[in-house]
Length: 481
Image 1: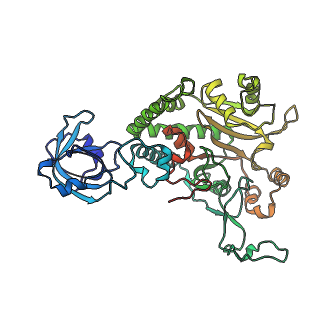
Image 2: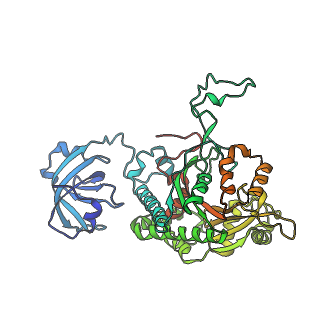
Image 3: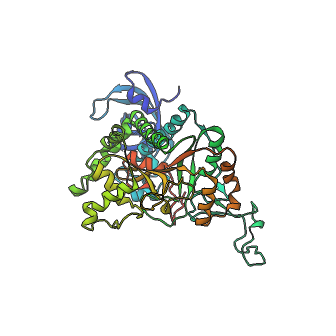
């Protein structure tokens, strides 16, 4: 007889039926009630054992964290908080757990402590819920694009190019660091390296994605990306996942429409398919906020916040309009912003983005047409405006609590303009001939965007630290497990 997953049993009404449960002990009280969890649900099932007829050596081994097999009958529960339980006829231990050493005791643990034991934190209700939601969002991303006939492209993780012009990249090498080969000029001789040239971990699949879009029309990549920024904030990881579609014949407006549709689709999917998990996370958040002063608490609970995104059209405005709003805003005039807005050309910080979303519009916001100087070389250039200012066809989607959720643009399809811009920012064209070929042979208007997947998970789960929404976070001085 096979065991039944706890998720199924909790829904079952086949009272009296003989069942087998396998899982891990969450708690064991009064030598009689075992709370068992097998990961299929955030909820446990209770097994009631006849302790008078259970051998002592078995009772001693029913400890928190131990793996057990329980055979018994499914009965209607008399206790509070559960509908069904198992009246055990047989209990056996599959795997022991030393209660003196097992770090997850039946009490509230801090998220900081759980990060130190990230290999065991999956066994808590909170992390069960987070990673179920993450799983649903990842599935929904693929479902969204597949339903729209996009081709899923796996772009390389090891690359010889730097898509962002960011410079903060992890080097990939097999050279002996204690005995580096040198050229006659004394520089490191990468010809001796595995790939015969200097290579890095990718910061984005965009450039290769563009090559594919100019053959298939619409493609998306969804894979790991890496940034070597020495940043210890609650919103940065050194290794994270990016969703990056690229679409031929898309102008900026089409790009914005697709990004808004994607975000609404995946959040709706998570709400519909993880109702218990999201309810659990909503209550967790409400509990956490009780300790905060009133003005720091969220105006909306988690479910309301997710519905807030689904029910509102995102406000669309230009960077220039946003700067006007921020210049006149109370926090700017009263010098409450950490970074004061002096005028046009300022790079917007998270506090400015959140002001626009949370205070001014009270809706998600799409900002477009940023100054050319603060954006990447590949973005399509707008005509110079009456004030002599040069902007690009960029778009960022800003969310409450998070700031930037999506960054994208219409790409510059004009070869001359692209080459001139690359020269201005110091990107050598000889290394990028393959990229420029897309502008030489049948160039078309095209667009794309990137969504940091962990930021999306952060928003959907209501967590506040990005290290809690990826199984094993990679951050400065931390590559454990």
